[in-house]
Image (cartoon, rainbow, N blue to C red; front, side, top):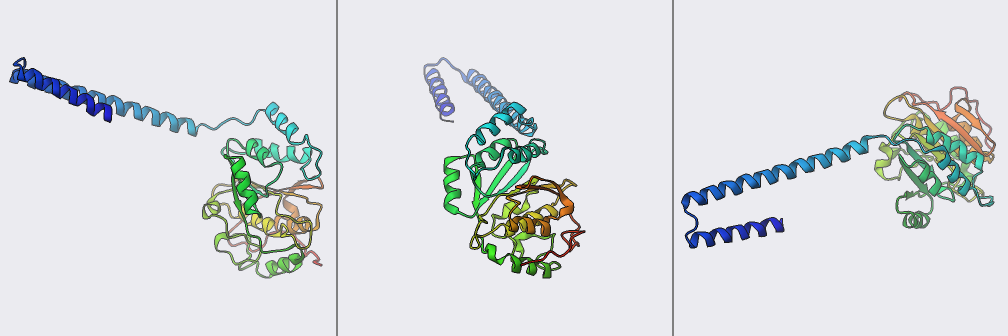
Length: 304
């Protein structure tokens, strides 16, 4: 705008000079003003046309679905993710199982991960053409990860449960299956003791295609345990808003009691499609809003 105004001032100044010296009569001044008006309109038209082209081009490119990650790139990422022998890392077989589902997920793919860890950058990279959100119990760890990886979206969760409370929490959920702990509900307003309802509001409006439960800590009686994460994943999957697509839910450390019992209670054996011992894969269909049972074929599990 500054350049346009300065040029206009120069032209008016020159016109005034010509007029003062007698070079321009009234008719010539009229022709000059007409020419300048037409020229300005042409410039305005060209600017508008260019803006429209840029806008339409960017919107068009953003609507084009990106292709799946090439298999050789996936293999390379898997290799470097599992190059360490730390026992805290997920196995190559388990990583590949989840990565394969993500690679063939509808675009854009919404991927929700409970827990931050060594594999976090890998999950973010694999789902490069979708949205990946991480939830962790440690707010400082989540902030550190986001600072180190600027393209990562992470939020902290305040868990109020402990592994030792698992029997009481499952029993309470059974008793409230038709009220606060029903399988289809808006978790944002849930009063169920196992529901996670303190996430940013916009996350409850997303239809999550893949959910991985790999947190919070669950290796001691005082740890938060994954009861709430598994229950919340089960409700999210059954409460999808759009389409007939199912939700793939993965539970890591499935060999542990909490993960196994809560998965059988809320994700259900009839929905399990694969289990490797340490990783269980469930496919959960959207449920009827009037449904009050998580599992069709569940028998009451003994709770210690």
